[in-house]
Length: 168
Image (tube, rainbow, N blue to C red; front, top):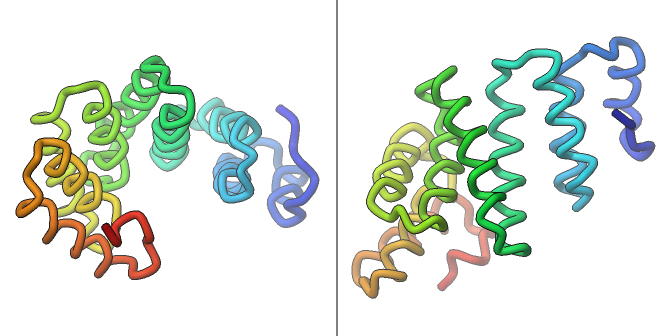
């Protein structure tokens, strides 16, 4: 697995201990923010190779594959995301982010009811996060239920005022 250059702190940690799965995950997160998705996937996978039950790396992979779907429209991306999210939930049933990304994958795969239940659970587990109510609002709007969607969009904005997608 290659280590990109622009992240000196993560690179130093990985150079000092190539088996530092937390540094690999942190580097993956940094690469996602820098829009270097293939390299981020490599780092999340490397973290999982070091520690197969590392929930946060699996959640990172679930998120990346879910978001890749928005560009590729390839349902295989959602299946990969769902697999990683499920593994994360099995290892840590109270991990809110894992529920978020499984909900997204299932929603986009057309499994609305299951997705909505998972997003609602994610909102309970991670009430400070913007994505659970946002995805719930999107699902409601998709079902032509704007009255149910509006308060959910408002919850997403309250959780993160700068989250432009929720300013519907």
